[in-house]
Amino acid sequence: MIDWDRLEALRDEVGDVAFAEIRAMFLEEAGEIMDRLGAGQSASWEADFHALKSSALNIGFTELANLCQAAESRAREGQGGAVDAPAVLSSLRASLAAFEQGATA
Image (cartoon, rainbow, N blue to C red; front, side, top):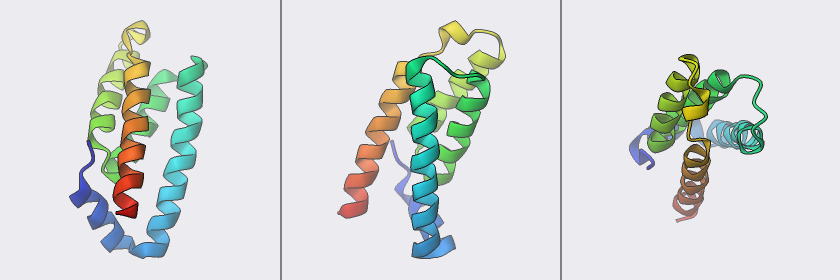
């Protein structure tokens, strides 16, 4: 679900202060996208999945990134109805919970 090595490499690259800022930015952006997807009110499904995928890869949320990649591809191909937004949201929530548990452990 989470590539802890990637997450720790990012923390090592940028330091604790910048990592905290990246974390906060990720949580804010992911929350906004999650709200849009959950409400079915995305102006651009492809763009939202792309943004979430990129952020997820950066912070090591590999499962979420993979789901977003598939959803982004379907949206790009005009198959927006085939996108499993609930699976993406579920993975995001589970990843966030695992991240919070791991971050405090």
